[in-house]
Every structure is written in C-alpha cells, then in structure tokens.
Image (cartoon, rainbow, N blue to C red; front, side, top):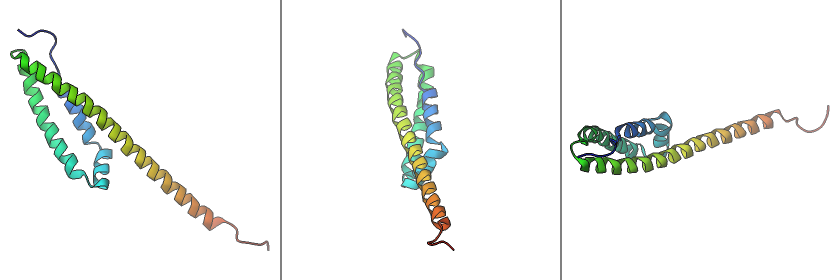
Length: 120
C-alpha cells in the first residue's frame, strides 16, 4: 500500500534539459570544446526523463519506485544547482569578455583621437 504523495521528477528533469539546451550553454560548449560532453549529458537526461515518466505512473503500485524517484529527485536537485552555477559562471565570463572588448575598443578610440604634441 502506497503512503504519502506521489513523487514527481519528470518536470524537474525537463527543466534541467531546457537549461542544458539554452543558447548560452551551447555557445559555452562550442567555445570550450565540450559540446560532445554536453550532447551526451542531454541524451542521458532524455533517457532519465522517459524512465521517470513511466516510473511516476507506476509508483502507486510499487513503493520501491517511489523511493527510486525520491533518490532521482535528490540527484536532479543537486544537478540543477550545479548547472545553475555553471550557467552563471558562463554568463559572467561572457559579460567579462564583452567588457574587456569594450574597454579595448575605447582605448583604441581614445588613442586615435588624442591630440598630438604642440599647439599650432
């Protein structure tokens, strides 16, 4: 007999997949040469999503599935936290690179418009 509420994991995994497929993370993967690893992670998460959907439907009949889904949920929470940190750092790095590029461009503009010695 199942007790307590149903454990829902599929929506959490879907949110994680959405983050993984974000343009920022795709660009990061291309720039850092980890696009294959991110693609593999995406495939694994899609498989976990499919398994979670089936397990969620069956958990009322099998309490072990509820325990399994609870463990998966904990892993997804930790993974989401790590992914959020990863996305934050990636975004921060992009902003820092943009800022450095703008400073570099500003320096070039200032150098080309600086009056050259002496008065006429």
